[in-house]
Image (tube, rainbow, N blue to C red; front, side, top):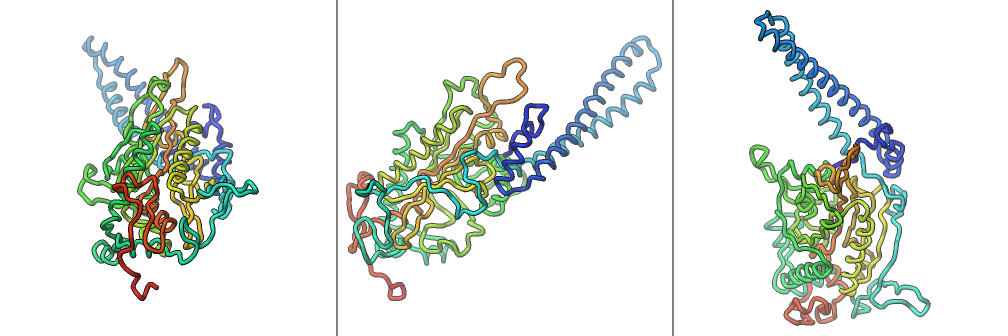
Length: 461
């Protein structure tokens, strides 16, 4: 992934000042931009020398032909050509190495931050865009605020989500850890049904909004993963499947965004008004190391290494991506409104954006036992940052055009099912069990309630 290196060159219509300003907004290295420009110029110089050498060889070859035909001595010319051929081979290798170094460095430059993103290095400054509560507006015209310890049916004695799941007998954490290690788990009984209900409801929800269901591979070749995942993700998030050779070096996906983004790699949409947007409702199991999150969200299945997720992924023409960004956010909001869960929508500060995102919104839902909002959804517009590396282009190239036009790519969670279930059971618990939200009942054999099956053990009271 990376920005267009032409953005660093004014003579090619670029604006290096804009790139430097964007890096500053990200609280990232500005010097990196100048380093990449220097590496680019070095690569261009080597490649120019190679092209000139090839022209010289072609010139010598033209001289050799007539001399041979005339049976004249070509010894010196052949020696000169052989010397130049050796030089060209070396220059070609030098050019390839210089380009690889430059592009690898360029991948560290973040996407251009959108002008509407709040500028800060601290996520404490994330901007709340709006809030939602199923009880609607107060008489004063303000959105109802959620309260600590108050769920959809209970106003006292609220349990945490892991306690609710324990009492419902739908989750086995200790046995999961015994078998799979830290954060391992088993969903059992009605827990499986609830999880499947969230999956099926989520997929159908997006299908009704024009999305095509897709179930991608759960692993990718390293070469393909490198085009869509940030470098640090290989160490912090991705599980590697060991094997000998490039074709056998694979990684488990951390989100269906990764394989879906590569679905149309090396393709060109020459009729974007007819062919785009492409709207995919991705469904996959996801695998994440969660390195660096030790001690965070340790209860239950809120933060785990294996989970199911329904993902929105859209490919658009460049003029439509911000309109699509709003549509995708609206889809996620409508989904959680349909489940009756209070939430706040926040705009992520510039310093917390990943490199690919020009702008990102998170939807954080309310957890009444803890009295906090927690992230359930992230929606990002990556503009052409991913599609450039994946070579997903659009439009018709006209005579005189010097710049390639790439599609824009957007991704957004609809529902990471286990995490969403944590929020759902904490909000919909009753003194005697769990009320099933109306939207999920058609996928739960028409049931509207699951009774508690056991008491909490003494140590957990």
